[in-house]
Image 1 (cartoon, rainbow, N blue to C red):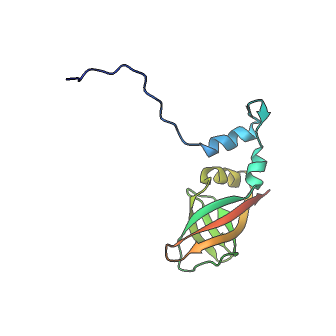
Image 2: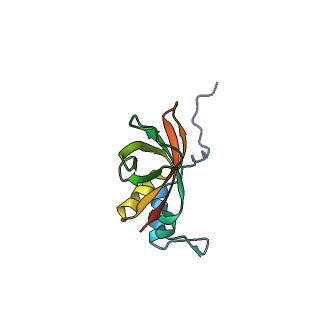
Image 3: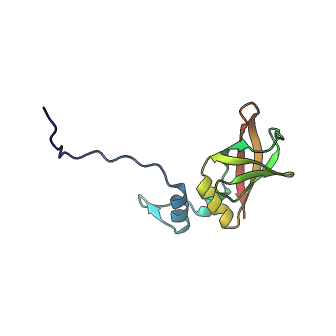
Length: 126
């Protein structure tokens, strides 16, 4: 008939990655398994794929130059202004790079005009 309390050990829920915390650990020189982690400079300089949602009427072309602007979430801009809002990728960590005075820019990789979404590849310069 049951109804009693179960006193067994529950399996803990596995959490997601905290990219912002990882970047902060990188800048502090934390170590993992006896090896030094890459620096925040390496993270910010590396190429990142970000997914974005278009926010204005103009559809950018693949290969068009874009840059990230700090925000929650970060915005994607071209020479004419803001064209979208970043929806996927390491957004918190990229915001941290922007806060450390990095410039993150790159190109539009793909566009799905019907869905109003796209992807861009960006990397940082300090």
